[in-house]
Length: 228
Image (cartoon, rainbow, N blue to C red; front, side, top):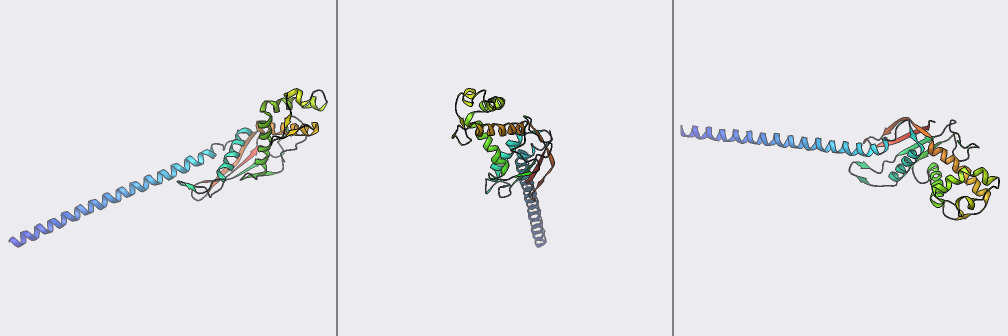
C-alpha cells in the first residue's frame, strides 16, 4: 500500500512537472511570436517611413521647385552605401522626367536647355538633368536670385544696349563657378537660358505611373511628365 502511494505521488509529481514544462514552452512560444510580430512591425514601419520621403512627391500637381527637391533627394540617397536598419542603400532609386512637346518657354524664344523629346534619367551627379539644375542654381548663388530675376526682366534692354549688366545689378556678372564674365553676348545667352530654367521651376509635373518597388519593399523608381 505504501509503495502504491509512493508511485502515485511520483506519477503526480511527474505530471505536474510536465504541465509546468508545457506551460513554460507555451509561454516561450507566445513571447517569441510576439517578438517576431513586433520585429516585423518595426521593419514595415521603417520601410514605410523611408519610402514616404519619396512617395510624398507622387502626385499630379508637383511644381518644378518640388521636383528639384526630389531630384536632389534621390541623388543624395544614391550616394550612400551600407544600410540603416531595414533600409538597404545598395538598392538605388531611379527617377525619370519627361518634358514632352507641351513644355514651352514662357518667356518666348526657342528652347535651348530642356529637350522635349528626351526622357531624363536621374540617378547620380553625372545625370544630365541634375547637372543642368546645378549649373543654374550656381548662377543664383554667385549673382543672387534677385539679380538673376532682374537680368531676366531686363533681357531685351540689355540686348538693345539700353543698359549694361553692371548698371542693373551693380556688379560684375559671375559664372556658376564664380569667375567673372564680361562678354555681353555670353551673358545674354546665359540669361536667355536661365529664363527657360525659370519656366521649368514654375511648371507643373505629374506622376506618369505608380512607383515600383524592390522585393524588400523599398521604392525602386518614379516617373514624371510635364503637365502644364
